[in-house]
Image (cartoon, rainbow, N blue to C red; front, top):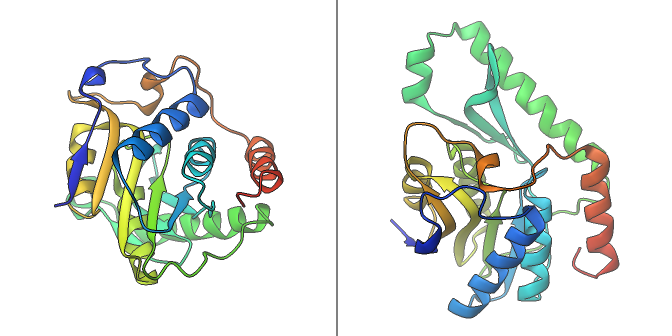
Amino acid sequence: MGGLYEDTRLRNRTEVFPDRETAGEQIGLFLRERFTFPRPVVCPIPAGGIPIGIPIARTLDAPLRPVVVRKIQIPWNTESGFGAVTWTGDVVINQDLLKRLHLSSVEIERAISRAKASVEERIRKYASIRPLPDITGRTAILTDDGLASGFTMRAAIDSIRLQNPERVVVAVPTGSLAAVRMVSAHADDLICLNIRGGFSFAVADAYSHWHDLSEEEVRAYLDQAVQEGLY
């Protein structure tokens, strides 16, 4: 299990960040003030991770390289998933949840296929997404706008380790206590400013202003990163 860091003043609170950009700025400052990472590369997960990752990259003077990961949706609840597929085609399954869902093999394969197609489509849409730089011996900082189940981030960690980084750090504004515990067992360090326990958890509850980002908004953020020389 890696190191786990939080802002204890924010534990179990809601609406602690005005928006994603401000949350990213706060994480960037938290990282800069407390850590020294060898040659960091900031790897946000689109869509929500992009406006988080840009301020982190800016603050740490690090390159930005998005990594596409999509959850494998539960057929009757597309907001939830029983695993995730990464940009490399790797598949991570929440086996405990899958057993409780009682899905047929056909339903499982169909859901995985949809997630893979979504990953491929998203990579095509973000035409300027560049391949990851050689991160051998570097610090990969994975970020998103929050950890609900944590399996999307778990999949990203497993895939990024294939690139032989020196460290894999996860840095997110908010996360459920269960997801934070699970993800921290796979990352070298996990920074989650706002950890919340309890039965019910929604990433959106950490933000005063929240909306699902459109593809156009993500493209605009990436264009901004290009102009700043981050991407």
